[in-house]
Image (cartoon, rainbow, N blue to C red; front, side):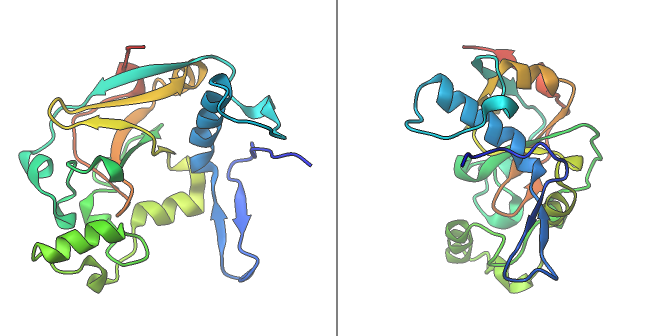
Length: 211
């Protein structure tokens, strides 16, 4: 037997416990999985393995840095869930989109329930008097669309570092992946409530090669 990364889009996951109702497209997460797997292999981190590498990036991984401007002070300073803070790097990621629709997945479309949100962050919000976001019982539009339409919506990356003071995102990416998606729009996202954060326009190709 061997492990493979599906190259179908959308690639569907079928829930065996509820065949009639749950079909999820997972292709939005395949690019990052392939990218991270290739990085692990390049650094000899993976030990014994049975892996089909034909769908993995082939060029070496490099460190990139992208500066994002236009982030409102309220998003810099607030720790509450409602304001969509960028203060917490543990819940930040980014999405690459071929076509950007402004406001389509902003804070108003975020998750507001215990299933989609980060439990630790929700607890912090409640302790600070922000109430329990789960009480609103609202699903995330971005999460729903990603799981129904896959990479037609975008390619999600959760492995990145965020420099709050300089408003820069840094990430490791294989050079052929970077080249392939260089014209895609870079959108900072929260991966607990699943929504896009407001910042100035940027494309992946605007990132600088720093290592």
